[in-house]
Image: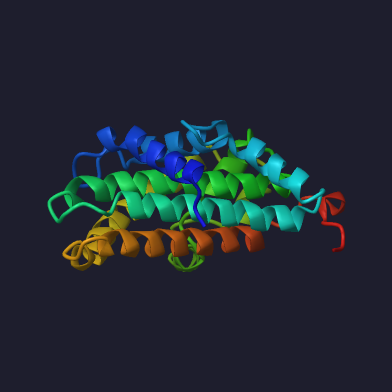
Length: 238
């Protein structure tokens, strides 16, 4: 259950990003995608840097990395759910502003979650290849599979993160693909929440469930895809 700090954290991210999202997909560009990853890794507002938050969970779980990964997912699903509730309470007119702001905030939360999982699995968050893998993971398992079939991306996240050399064009490619996906999500979010906004509080409930479920699915995908880099990182039994 979301506590007061969690609500404040999610609302803080929304307030930080809302002024940058006044139109259909304002700032939801390649530049935003890179900035979202940077903020996720280094922290923004009340949200701690991804690695710091992940290490806290690792200590709480007494070194069990699998349990720490589950906690990272759970915590960020909570953040995303509260963010979805807070930014979807307004009326239909407000949707024009809150949909882009909501997508922007949830993207940072999901980036932070995947970065935390990557850290716990032994990946270097300062490595551009890992950053590109995090970006691709945010597309979700189904979208990644479709993009692989269409040859729009060259490899799944794990392969991108562990590529022997850095492809200098990969950053622009994956940032562009995710930026396009974010614009699609803005349109989809408006359609999903339009009906809910006609009933008091229902719009917030729809946003909460939608964002929480999407974040959970991305977290589970990241946990399966970003496997431990070394045997020493495998969790202790229990």
